Image 1 (spheres, rainbow, N blue to C red):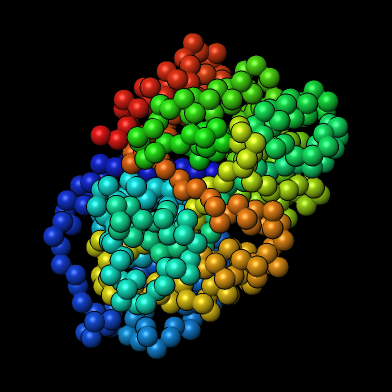
Image 2 (cartoon, rainbow, N blue to C red):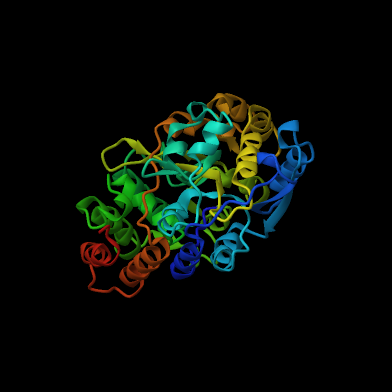
Length: 414
């Protein structure tokens, strides 16, 4: 789950699939006293997550007697996002999916996910032991569509070596300081002040830093959002201190940052493992993102376990989720090589013992805000990026306010 975020390919496919499932009956299985049942668990692959799930699934408890789990492994998270819409349309999707809640609103709007409130109650999953921000992120209209599995967040990634070389004494404490520091790095070192992966997730961090947000489509054209976009446009067109990852010959922001020639990036804990491998000599820090008013902001989101509406046995799926999120497996997550922050709050300090780079983010994590994308995540993200790139690459007369007004008309909540 790197900083890269690609979005859903076909809402129409999802909608047609949801219409096919409307009113469908639930097939009974072992969890409800019938014949044995197999549950498919989908997730994106990787060495450590594979090892983690192999260990956890090799010792299923008595509560899962009669239930077998078949893994559906997508090579990367991008593959998961790109493949899932066609699987949903063909009804070949897994029963349970481990994913992040960035695209949740779109799937909920198309009716393809099961509500988990009754499963949480039946399996005695105490949501009060999970970070409230994570629970909120998986809740829409009072219904829970995913049980939090691990925590994730946004952060400002700071190259401390470049700050020192540029004569900057401390990391920025406001967006105005961030802009000034990025320019100073460019002028004093010749390196890039700030790298941006120009997608919805990363652009949103600057919108949030100016007190804005998308409001699930209700507040797209707010003045604060326009200020955040203008801030980024100015870095590219006036200061010329920023560059996209692609301009720097990188597939994503972390790859560019790991070269040691970038001062700032928006990223998150996924940088920790990557930097150990790709940029071990770069002295960096992960910090809460400064705001325009001098405070800090952070998006708290993360991985969760959802059940599809066409799952073979929702009771069995609920039992599997209860097992995957129990205390023993959360503790294993904190202490294993996976280096994921468990969704249960009691393991924060244990996690930091294993991953000390996360310590500066601890307090802000408890107060983090949720992602609030409009329901048509892909369409909105594509058009936002298209308009933004038009402003920074083509010196268009289009202004951030005009772009946001267009997006409000097209994607705003009705």
